[in-house]
Image 1 (cartoon, rainbow, N blue to C red):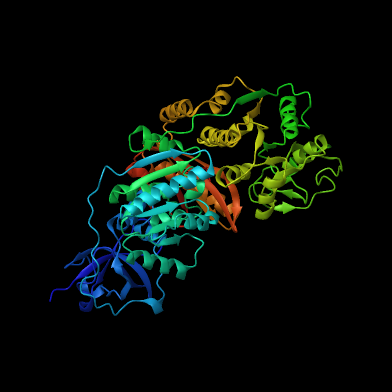
Image 2: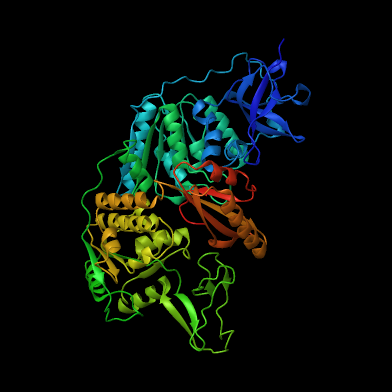
Length: 630
């Protein structure tokens, strides 16, 4: 009998240049091993999981050096839409196929290794013809109940047609609620897949999904890689959320892209649901790859409030117009939302004597002032409030820039009969829930946007206010205008839920960017997509970041500088530009220092750029078209 060999991707972290490995198929497993089989193979003296990509009667290495596979992780094979992912993720995210596979294939303990499979013909994979008829939708919703209703409608229609669905949310805390909502009478099983699960539980759910002809998967970004056997729908909720991407490790995969690939491969439907979709999804709609459903049309009254001559001064950031509207709303028994994206008591602490700004020793940015001390807004390092300046000894220290706590105090003085609450990360989940129900005025950071826009709320708003519209445009990165518009869009939806006005303070009400932020969806998307096209930023170009990590700050900076020089030498002129090293937005995290290098290139990464990144150490993190730089 002729020998049989299998090309197998082992689920281990490997250098980017390595691919499949040859293993011999024992005679007892012939007829059982096939393309897509989940197998266990020996790897450097230990068993590891792997995926069969090809069977052959010949091997690419000498027979005497080829080890035999040990057994199976499961008797069912993975379907083609999932089987193709390790190589697609390798090409897209510049990692080895083995590193990509390790990101999602559960580990099989030695005691669970399957060696006694006797079934001559494992269940055949379902063969499907790719279809262009499956719905590809971009849906913008206004209220959280609309989001849930749409998820139920799309999922129910999919399982009624005899196919399964994968529903992805960026927040693990919302998985249980979705499972309840999508558990239908006499319907298919609903299985959770998310990063918060233990390894054994994840493996059990994987094996259950492989055996179920039809199932519903609910989870976070990891659910995009679930082994559903007959996918009919990939549904991404809050599709604008950066939490839909993997972070701080390779591969930095994007579950929205994974879902798109799998839908294309399997002929399944695809739907992105969001308050304010990303420009990438609007670009897909412009190409005809997504259909935009009718979106809410009745926006609230939007007012730009010029605060260049605010008579109340800098120690009170709300203009008379907003204060008057607040007073009127409270008199009518309605709530007021004040969006103020600055935590704590103040934005910074300075010495009046020598003008020293108290900074984070790691991040080199101003420390925010809180009730319990100074806190870095990036790395969260805390220190006690100083009694004197360490440079000149002066005890006259001054807060600069009001935080949510200070604004809460100022508004409480103005409205002593009302309950004012600073709604930020200092509150527990229970305190935040109670604050929405019991407070008359909420002063909130970005955290409040999610809780009010995505979770059920009975709040009746009389006014929604933004203290600093210009500040939304003050952050670095090519996505800053899009992110600012998305914030305004969500605030508009919150205001519209109660037919309340949205009042936004600005120093430049006639500025082009400010006017763009308050424009309608169609005009903003057209203008910003054209700007992206002209500057060759994603989705009309590629931006790559390389994060260098080390336990020593000096060593991190040294490696980053050497890498910049090496990349500039390796990349062919015209193939891309290299910038950096840049300071990471959180330079010290989990015991490691970080520095960032940026590469800007074309939509298709040129060979010299790809080759240079392929040779990087595995400890360096590569991110393609990141949400933020670093």
